[in-house]
Length: 179
Image (tube, rainbow, N blue to C red; front, side):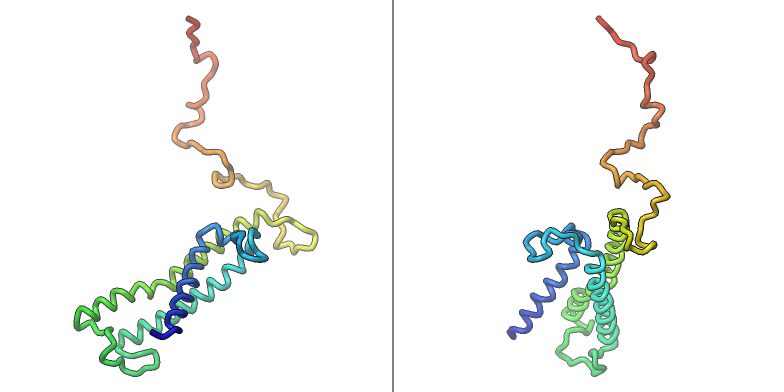
């Protein structure tokens, strides 16, 4: 086997693993073992831009390959060779098509992960960004409004199963048995 195939496979697996950073904690704060940036908070654009470029490239490539293969052609428009198992005439072709079909979803799914990452980080970065006199008015937090408290922003656990009035008891309702 050629060395470039092995190296290309390792490289593609490493790049694919970085998609986990869009949902894992190390996509927001760099692991401590990474030189120069370890333990620091990663800017959202530093992660979102490469992920968006990768999602766009994967979507375009998989769409091109999917369309041309379904037409019996390669990406250059030439007819597929007879030894290429992308014909659904036998079980080899059906198995090959079934194995490679999920790759068509990789680009769009990575795109949706990137959008979710960007929305999550934009929301948290807005609340954490300190206001400075040098930041633009769009970057400053609106200090005229009090901050809203949501269940996800507090450590308290809310119990919505019972009404507040039912959980409050008056001292006269409680009988104490002194015996």
